[in-house]
Image (cartoon, rainbow, N blue to C red; front, side):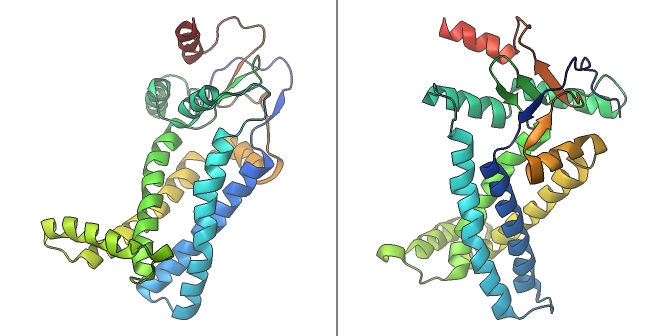
Length: 270
């Protein structure tokens, strides 16, 4: 693989890539997901390494940790701000540039594909603005695409899991499982399928997606030795040394021209 040809760093620059809460969130997400997958497949396939009751109990214990990590901590980490001047518009812009797959990401992904076939340089997908003191983006474009499917799978596994947990569960008297099952029957009837069977199928499909995502995320995107620095950052230090220019571009203070997105934003604000 041809490496990124970003200019060598003139000095060492260590910045915080992940806050302590982001690292905790990632760890809780990872552990709870593993517990859910292992116990879930045990319940589905009947693996003999533990009893059904133990597997179901562990499964239900892991559920709130998984949902809190993804539906409370992740949004908080995305939209919280340590800076003194931090508007809603700033956070929405940060969310769009950092987590949503856009034109710049499409160009990076195309360059990555070309690089795979020996054409061109591997683009930097970690972009840090030294002038503003924060990342413009720090996710691989492939990961941004995976986030779309992961978010969908989380919603899917949560809704179908409610029905599989108990058809009579009614928080505050609201028959949530019955509503979900009714919707399932509506779509299942179109394909001559049982509504509850469709629920089970979708729940299992979401589980297989998480397995596939794990393979892609860890087995393909992160096994490059030059990407191991990100494992150290997310699991231990939280910091990144930007003088290591593999996959990294730094917009330095002396640079007068920012990213294309920055230029567009400045024009819109004028």
